[in-house]
Image (tube, rainbow, N blue to C red; front, top):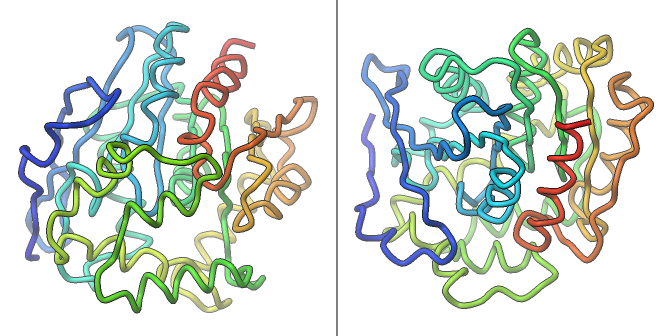
Length: 301
């Protein structure tokens, strides 16, 4: 497996992101290993929030959330998915799959860090991956915060705006990651913030994961991930694990998924599910402090 590793110098100018990364080795499925990066911030004995990002961002997305949670005494573990951030980046899109992303993340969280009593916070692909982990390893989790995410099985078509996004990512001669993030926000991004989202990808070959991920979302009933995701729906539909749905008010991609999560998962009952106002798909960027307060109140309830 050919791998690109972003030079450390690319990350020297990151606004409001003072945390030093830690690293773990995970299996690359070809007999070798990949380096996964993560942030581990806050008190070592604090309740654990596992913050999982999605496409095409990295742990930088959670910087405001981390600050708020750490101030509340919560330990934040924030991985960079393989292909993103400071983690290794296989350069062949065929090296990425939904199942591999789930396993790579599981290996980091459970084998390397041995996290327990975890509250998952998943947005975008962070939910697609994280909800599988919760369903398949429920004994490791204390709760879930689903933020602009879902668990597609391919039985229901994705919205047209998502298909336009997928086509744009797949066809772009040069993939402008900073522009993609900016287009998913309702509040303007400062130039240095936009540059921080570009930082992990100084070469086009480093963007194989960002290009591949939209195509890994199950869009037909016989997708390789469809049956595992149906099993995850079944497990979560029978689980009493507390499940908070904290979506933004301005995300055309995932907005319709909030009601399905609240309807089908018993862990959502008896909870007040907030709507984060004036925030787009990347609500951590638009309203990270507010989302952090929502997560902290949920964990401290």
